[in-house]
Image (cartoon, rainbow, N blue to C red; front, side, top):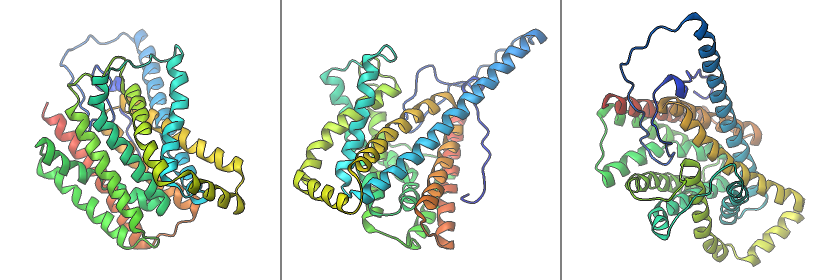
Length: 365
């Protein structure tokens, strides 16, 4: 999987029936509406050209969105690792990255480009469990990325489907057919092999990547529980993510200040300057990591809203491969043959799991 280019059959929204409402990326089981059996008269030759052009434009749009998604992800992961190498304060950087999203959101909501969300105290209470898991998941990811190799963190994070199935069974009493569970065997086995053969293994990186998997799985569970509760007005997927970002920022800020105190931050800043990093580099890299963190999540929503869930699952798997390969090239991360085999096995298992789960969901309709 890591060494061979993959071909993705893009299934745009126009080519496959989709839900009428926007879907949230936090809902772990995105479902597409079943297609009808209506028969239409064969189009006249004069009508074929516009239809072909429209389909081509839709395919180009989807391809462009997926390209942005991959590029933004790579830029975020590389800039995040660079700033953590120079300024190793993951709590602060996690909060900064969430805070930079506000600089993007607030002007956007103040403009005619996007309606601002309207939420009440009750709405915020309904969203609080989701926001808490979102913040913890992001924090754990940043800590893991700072403590170990980017490639290693993403290999371990490939085990998130295993956590999702366990959480679904415990909290939602939701179970899948046996083939879905069997696809988790290569996921768990691959992560185990990759971890045991990781040359730069770090328990901090490993445990926080696992913590991230747990938090994001619980975020999906809480999202399902809150689906039928009021969440406010103008709360499409993008605005929902924006509100959760703000809530996570407010929730993490006091803890970051208590753990990484201003005195520690000043000492770390002075050490970074003494090591040859300019203040401009530190500020610029911090801002870029925060901006692209928000942008890649925003584009991920657009991708999910424009393609079938199976296409999105395949694209998400390829995205992880792209990040691993890019980080290995940029940072020169060494990988043993067994490490490569474990990584490939885990990522292939994630792809099989996503396909099996989505096909099972479609058969139930």
